[in-house]
Length: 234
Image 1 (cartoon, rainbow, N blue to C red):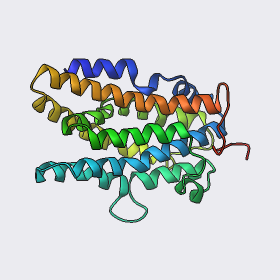
Image 2 (spheres, helix red, strand yellow):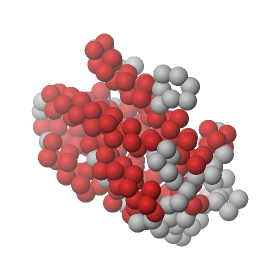
Image 3 (cartoon, rainbow, N blue to C red):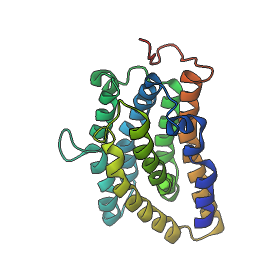
Image 4 (cartoon, rainbow, N blue to C red):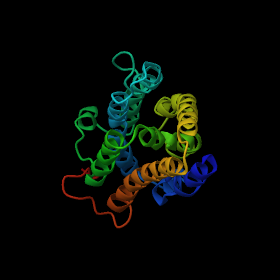
């Protein structure tokens, strides 16, 4: 099962998407970077909601205690701390107004649909599938290391402080992924359950890919942002 999970990541993680390849190669405009950061904020802001929904279904207090660290990692222990605050800093460094980002103005409809579908999945599927859907974190350190190197080199508007979200997640994500992987390996005790774990990861890779598809369509090719969406030229 672990081999199958890693093969899914190797084939379908969103670092293979054309939009992220353009980012890695330094070929996005500042406006396209703004659109990415803004839409990604919607995803980041919903991660604690997803984890809180998951925790509400955990009967085991020990499991809740471990999982609660994820909420604190994103929300912080105080105002201005945590991953969400660091993502807002990146948005501001890219020239976005903080109040517009927090108000979620201009988010692509496809971003909302994909992220909301992820929260619904975590709420409605089995606890095993919900935890398995987080296993994209097995592959996120690779794309984050790439961003730390290439974005600093390729984009003048970005500095190390702006990328602090990724610096911190390089330590957090592997620990989260190791725990989730151990959990599914211990609890997926039948072929059907192991297939359900793989299907949950496939669903999550689709969620991430759909978000990149939306950015590509709206801001790269053919470049058709829908009504009400963020427009860099504005």
